[in-house]
Amino acid sequence: MIKQGKRVHIWLPFILLFFGFSFLEFRLYCLQILDHEKLSKEAQGSQDRIIEVFPKRGIIYDRNLEKLAINVPSHSLYARPKEISHPEEIAGQLSSILEVETAGLAERLKKEATFVWLKRKLSLAQKEMIDNLDLEGIGFIEEAQRFYPQKELACHLLGFTGVDNQGLAGVELHYDKELQGEKGRFWLKRDGLGYEISSTKESLQDLVPGKGIVLTIDNVIQSIVEQEISLALQEREATSIEAVFMDPRTGEILALANKPDYDPNSYSNYSSFSRRDRIVQSLYEPGSAFKPITASALLEEGLVDQEEEIYCGESVKVANHVIHDWHSFNQNFTLAEILINSSNVGVVKLASRMEKEIFSKYLHLFGFGEKTGLDLPGEERGILRSASSWSLTDLPCIAMGQGIAVTPLQMVTALSALINGGELLRPYLVKYVRSPEGKIVEENGPVVRRRAISFSTSNQIRELLGRVVEQGTGRKAKVEGYSIGGKTGTAQIPAPDRRGYLPDKYISSFIGFAPVDSPVIAGIVVIREPTGAYYGGEIAAPLFGKIMKRVLPYLNILPQKEEWVERKVIDFTLAAMVSSGKKVEDR
Image (cartoon, rainbow, N blue to C red; front, side):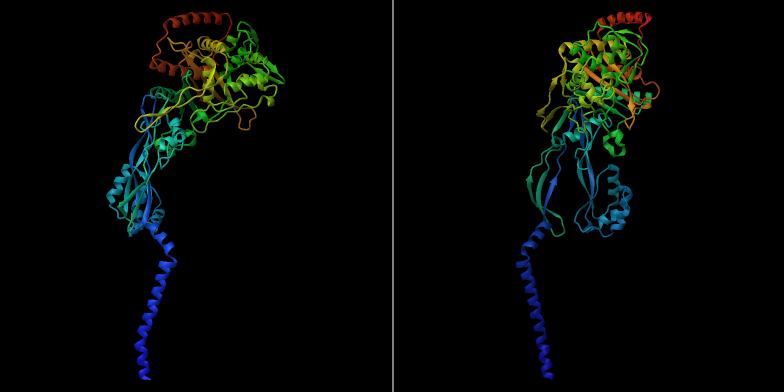
């Protein structure tokens, strides 16, 4: 019995070693043979890493190469959780600086990961405070951050970018592909602790910087427009003011502004209304500013003679609807005098001579009911119903600017066609795209979409609109020494339920251009819901005049002294008209 027990003690270690080595061999067989492919991939995945490097975003310039959007260095905070022994304590120190919840930050610091972002693109003050804490497992990576040196200036057309410098609005979004460039990609290995082995670095894709964008806008004109409409917004206590100016000969946008506005460097702090580009995204009824479109169609069709006189009473009945004039004229007016006095009755009587299909054709020729093609995102096409669905009152209402919804951009584009010889142009905002080395790689230029009216009709309309400013409702847009043309507009705001209009809610506007004989600039100002005075001739026309008084000298347009003397004669004639009973008031 004793000898047998000794034998068991002698053989037991050998038996245990045998089974131990057998198990080890079995595990090695599983790891090296059965699971080799799976484990090899896992090892390679943990050791190999493909790094993406974002290029510098292209710079945005105005037409004179003034920088409007640039890149500045910034620092993003990261953590290596495996190196952090007290995550709750570190989270407590960082949360107030990063302005995040402590609990959520602590969870990120406890992750089973070699690298986690804590916050991207910190301010310099935040970085300095964190540096002073000297925390373990915490570090910074330098990144490029989009910066707009002129803050609110041209914010709606520039737009803004996200945390990864991706375009989110405006030119930044529309030209994101050109501005973004191409990311660089390289491969490297990491050791068992997750540290990069720099000697293994291998390029997979070269980094290509973003292209530069040169806009058509002029920084000085943009500044003038924004300054003037900001003052008007305060003075009129309006909901908003929009203004856009373009070269009617080419379609180049010279200035585009909305107030209130926002700082794209901190866009998330502003309301969606402030960030909305209402020039291209908000609709309104243009009111009397639309009457030159109606007049051009009548002239083009030969349905009116400029010497013909139309009786303009207090009202005119169309079907079962009575259309009133804004003033009791009760006298005969020529076409010029109808526009000068902005007579609703006169326009409606003349428009009744047109078939609705004919009028609809001209509305489409001028681009209403469709996008202008401006290189900005989110453009509205407006509202213009098919002529086949018009009621008996639709044609006369549209003729005087009601029952149709447009954008300010559509109006200034149509105005340009009215005065440039009759060609409807595609407006554009980017003059050219250039490589990082400064070479032009893509260039925009004038594009004629179609002919809206004849050269002869355009000349007549231009002259008529000049007389509106000299003698009529637009006279407060006058600039001494210069010839200005244009038309006032005052419209009520439709009720949300589309039944009638809101009481005491108006939109005042003025479309204009200069000089009358050879226009080099055309534009529109739209004042939404002003407090107090609301007629376009009282508040929108003076605003347009203030802008032109500063812009025209900047464009090297010399005062036309001889024409100014002639206008003094016209003013004398106007005084004689008033004394004879022909009333001219603001509208």
